[in-house]
Length: 215
Image 1 (cartoon, rainbow, N blue to C red):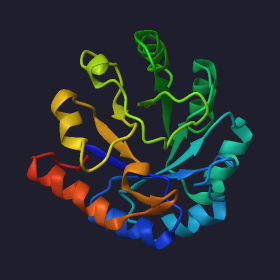
Image 2: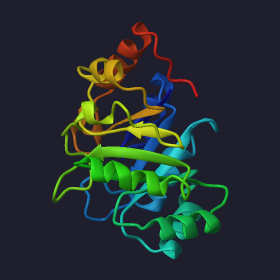
Image 3: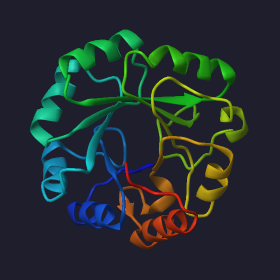
Image 4: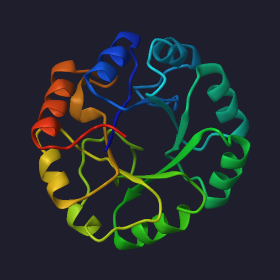
């Protein structure tokens, strides 16, 4: 199972989190976010990482040209779209960046949102389901309605996000079977500053439960 830790801002933390067991790291490319990092900062954070760690940039309503430039400048291996991007936009981006993983994040509030998620699956590589918040795009600490997701079986891999912490991760995984999990605020001291003790605790709990973080 993939384990993505999102909202990395410090190069030394990226190395430490990867060494603890993360298979993917997320970097926020949305200027309004308190976790925003520049392409140069991302490059500094990903350069010392092993090649098998996914480096994913999070964008919201950016142009394809802007996303492509950031990918080139920073060394990202994946692009997560967290705005109002249409399936057509996702398809165009995937054609523009054929070697890069395209993830679409959807903030789920109802079954209608899940039905919308299915539409995206043919245009992307991976779905990410996050908790709905009227103002914030992510990192809200709010959880999804896990019961609503129990019969969700998309045709592409999907990651569970939204308010996950070391304390509730086993409960979530006892109800759901995602291809991966995504944590941000649940392992932070403050936005962008990860709590490495919480990250370590997360992998300790995953390990004792028999959940592997290997791809």
